[in-house]
Amino acid sequence: MTIVVAGSTGLVGSAIMRELNRRGESVIGINRKVVDLLDRESTFEFINAAKPELVIDAAAIVGGIGANNKFPVDFLSKNLQIQNNLMDASHAADVERFVFLGSSCIYPRDCQQPIKEDYLLTGPLEKTNSAYAVAKIAGIELIKSYRKQFNRRWISLMPTNMYGPFDNFDLETSHVLPAFINRFVSAAKNGAHSVTVWGSGKPRREFLHSDDLAKATLMAAEKYDAPEHLNVGTGEDVTITELAETVALESGFTGEIKWDSSKPDGTLRKVLEVTNIKKVGWTPEIPLKEGIASTIEWFKENENRLVKRY
Image 1 (cartoon, rainbow, N blue to C red):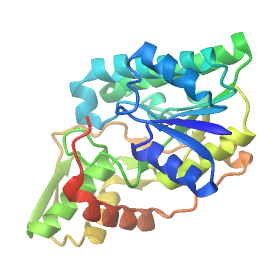
Image 2 (cartoon, rainbow, N blue to C red; image 1 turned 90 degrees about the horizontal axis):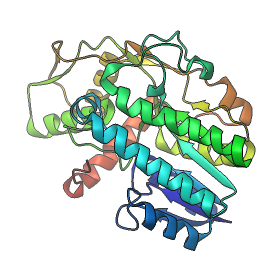
Image 3 (tube, helix red, strand yellow; image 1 turned 90 degrees about the vertical axis):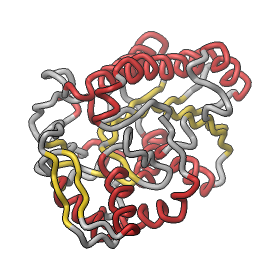
Image 4 (tube, rainbow, N blue to C red; image 1 turned 180 degrees about the vertical axis):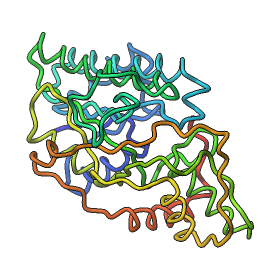
């Protein structure tokens, strides 16, 4: 079976590529150097030539609160174009299976916790990332529409906050965990006495290692076939303060952590209900502390060649 992974050099896509290569599968990775998914004609030509049986869409314009606030048009328009072009091209090429990877930010800001799949569209979105969320909600609906109109066996997965090798560690556009890793590793190396980070530290977040998501994605591609999207996460959360303290410890930073409460916290709590994905047969394997430690080591080894990717 030939498998195409879109976004193959990103955090999630690279983990899926590693797992597929480990299994000895025939896999083709797409990144911007291979084909620009914003270019509709090129996307159609590429997928038609590859003729895959499975397409995994891990391609997206992503970023943290600051980037989402600053570039809402990019996060909405470009993500819509990427996923629409890839799905339409896959349909034209008669791709049997398609996995659309979204984000837990699709859910309302003030959701009951833990968040179940059927809480989607039950309240207002978090304003700081609503543009990105709307794009991902549209992706879920397009998957459902292809299933309904053309009987496609396509599915959607909504992961929680991700981390791991090949993440975006740029301080201007990254999510909270890779930003913490960058800040605390640099502070430890430079002997800084303190590090100032955004918000109050009170919000609670859930984090999943990209290698765990890779296994969940491939298991769902093999065993799950229904229009309803599936949450993918650990079902466990920590405060941002606890997260910062863990990253500081694993980075070797011993100074003071200061909080800039003038910066937004975002959603106060977000943890997923993951019963349905576990029924498929998947469960996460990498503990948060262990995953943070290994990601820090990867960052240290690759820091000099990392580039800004937004």
